[in-house]
Length: 462
Image (cartoon, rainbow, N blue to C red; front, side, top):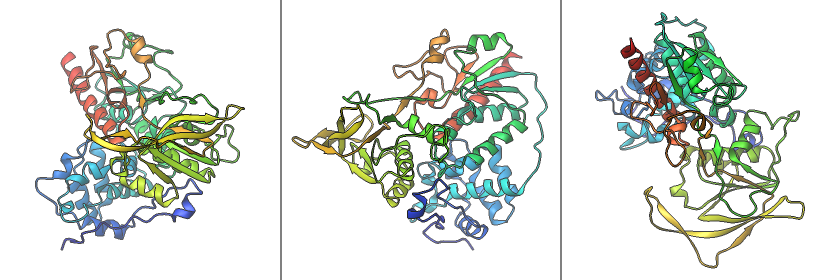
């Protein structure tokens, strides 16, 4: 008999007042009993609406059925056919707006906890299976991938599974992109990212780090070296600022820099070679997942008060509901319907406060959200000594500036066809380099789509 409970099995977590002082993973994962009980909530719909909500088209009912049968390796194999990074997606994918949003069980209750089940299966495989993968026969084609983030790794994995010789060129000293420099350890342990990348290496993907395409080598030179196609998955790592007075004071960070110092350079360790100034009172400007990550990191570094300053209301906040709830539980203070107008500084050029105005919501703008407008005579000063800007990012222009004929839009994003093809023959792109800052799973979907298009292109060349 199916489990007709209207609620998901609760995810075990660290206590909020314990976890806000450490960088260990917050969510502890399902037990086998919890996973089986949750799997029984799946009705095995014949039309599989959840699959239509998954950017990489995992056969969700099929892998959940395997959990019911306690065939966990079978469940992993089903997921792995579509996703190169299942342990990652199970943790950071916004399932509530994708696969779970289509779940029939969500009509009269909570949807099946698809993401938690995916994480459970991936973690079980990682801890229990030591099977060397079968290498695909080589097809004689050579492809370059720029960027070892979610889009690039997914594209590389699918191409390698098809027999291509794939080399990934990564600018940083480690592979993973935003998975290693952007998402904190307490949400996504780096050991899991490295494990997923090792699996890709075992199926034949070569990764060359410390290679900045556009400086060390150009796309044109890659073609000259024998690569028949190139995928650009270089992300959107260029931070945006508001352009308000005081942004050059000491103690003002972009969220990218702040999180990179913590996640990639381990600034939270006592012996860190590059510690990060975090202040006693911190304001994080923005309302997305990155803002939540920055605020929760600042709290863990020892800040007494951490504020999320967001110009719209809580209902319009783009961050995942779960991340907002976790931040609130950990003591983050939400200052919504507020907007900074100036960063104040002392005589030593250090931040001494954040001047803000109160906002109210007007008519909807082009995004469909109600546009915030300034309340008259509402200016106030927030007592902070550190400000972290988390208002979005855009692609670095380096590749655009060093590649002839590569069309970009006014935001600096690469323009592509639906297939991922750019204005240059043989050059494909996807992920944040095309869309601007978005989610990990959407980047993976773009990488998967581009890999399929590249294989068709190579086949037609033959």
